[in-house]
Amino acid sequence: MMSIVDEIDKIKQQLMLKGFKLTPQREVTLRVLLENEQDHLSAEDVFMLVRERFPEIGLATVYRTLELLAELHVVEKMNFGDGVARFDLRSEDHEHMHHHLVCHVCGALKEIKDDWLLELEERLQHEYGFKVTDHRLDFIGTYDSCSRGDCKRKDSKAVS
Amino acid sequence: MMSIVDEIDKIKQQLMLKGFKLTPQREVTLRVLLENEQDHLSAEDVFMLVRERFPEIGLATVYRTLELLAELHVVEKMNFGDGVARFDLRSEDHEHMHHHLVCHVCGALKEIKDDWLLELEERLQHEYGFKVTDHRLDFIGTYDSCSRGDCKRKDSKAVS
DNA sequence: GTGGATGCAAATCTTTTGCACTCGT
DNA sequence: ACGAGTGCAAAAGATTTGCATCCAC
Image (cartoon, rainbow over all chains, first blue to last red):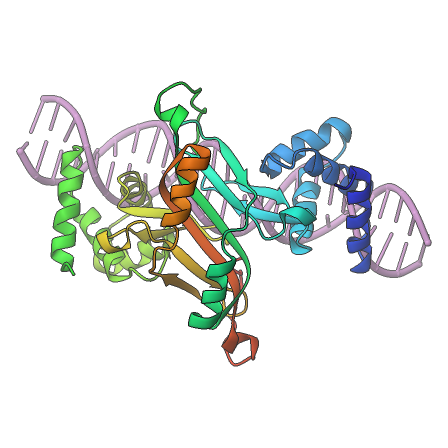
């Protein structure tokens, strides 16, 4: 597994290859994303975390950075139905495996790391003439522990 | 397959069971949804179609109706990344089978009707103690015909 | 007449944009 | 000095909310 510095360096290459710079703002944003890989942060979340280390940063810059990173496929922009876009880092070992378990009750959002869909993607190619480059798979349901009631239900807006 | 009248009647029961009324506005909204089952309409889309038959209706009513129907699981609120929520009717025979093919090139959004995930859901139950009640599966990629260039690329905002 | 439902307008919230300014080369 | 990148404030959208009114029972 790569160190954060290495990750940043790799992404820096990707940026420069396309003529973009790794500015301090972008670097801090990347660090925040790397250090919260599991968390599906919203732009606002990222903004607040970045501001702790770089107080002058503007929200617009964060949005622009996230947009840029999404275009480069460094992060993936996702939507879980709560009205805000969330950003998922796509490090090498996550590539092409974005499965989520969303719990009704506690709102927990867990990431699953297997790649279960290769066979289905074959079928799509043959039966539908559709070449899959990416996929998204979310399961909505309930953890057994939650249905038994022993869990802290999550706050306000459900990530439906 | 049920007629539209029957479908509406069934939904009316569901509404009344929970103490809601099937008002004319709600009925027209339902009709529009039923007649455009394949289309993943946005609230704005629904509004415009409803207004053709019920010009006095307000946009807020449409939003409120769609929200209500989503809570009753009559429709499903989805987000394909273009900044607007889209609504998918969940009639009996679609139940639990929400698979989409999203084409990069032409933006086409196709629905697939097989249910491919039962086995995986079993596994989730056993390996993760997670009882699936619903799922969402989108494949992003390209139709062969589109990659050959013979297709009309879709307009502006990509449904990423 | 009571309560749910509606229409309208205003408010809210997320995201985007215009513009003047900064900074590295 | 050029151009990419930035911060700020304003704008743009989508969605929600407050409120007076309407309508069915």
